[in-house]
Length: 427
Ligand SMILES: [Zn+2]
Image (cartoon, rainbow, N blue to C red):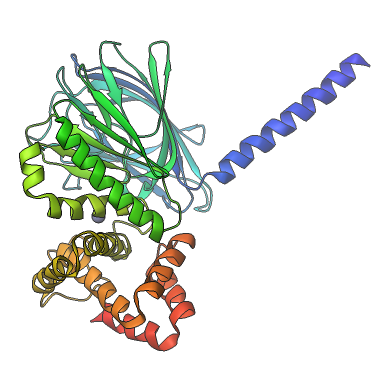
């Protein structure tokens, strides 16, 4: 009898566990990485065990991913079965010249999620001189420019749990919640991001401030008190405006001082990685810097469209126009109009936003100048408050395509306005 009861209990436990795990899988909206890694910056060595759950519809019958060419894959399974490699070639992505592109056969319906499990390791000693990913004794900044994890732009946005085993003499930083366990630092985030940037140095100072309902982290080595205060103050103004205009989104954002001398700065959802930033330069160009900070911060809300297609206008157009709206609030209409005029000039004679080539020469002007100008015209036509309502509805409805955008616009403003805007997109 006891044995029967135990079996019954076991069955219930298994059933509940299955339910819980199914629920977790179903609840997962984004591609998720679960990584256990060891890193030795002095030896430029990493050893990684990675589980990757790719959301359905992101692979087709061939799955591509990129990994730095000096990393050797030890084992790789797809949904528990040994992977069949189709090819490995040099990278065809401009910003990842040091990567190898792997192709795998995926033998299952496209609507099923794909789980990869791979082990890889190696010494990363070679990278392009302009690389914004580096590893070394003084400064380590590992991100998608290598990439140090199996990456494909179409997996974005992503969430992760990364367990980093490292020499305790080093401090580490990644966005997300940080937990310490013996010998390990663990980073975990459910907020969708666009990269996993691991920074490491022996002298990393991390300042954390609560602003409204947001958490701002400033990670640096050389920033002055005044620079930190000015950055925090500007971020506070930006976040409080976005907090009024938009529904609650991701709630943490970080600014990282990169100790690289080359490679420049870059932005990710929720994180800005800035190199060669000092107090004098910042204070001299504070207003244009506000636009930059506001644009990147706006991506906490504007990130859902595919960044590799023309639909990226939804991300970039709205992030840039949100930033211009911040400038209008903080510095007045005159300064705002200056930006509008300069965007008119730089987008003059460019082709339509509609189906523009994301990798084409005009892409920057079309996505960052022309698209926000169209939104400026739309705001002029429907009015400031209805425009903010439109932005809120787009965010709440998780809009990621132009056709969904058009439906929401039509619902709110009617057929005539929707047709008018569609023509704008197409001209
Ligand atoms: Zn952007």
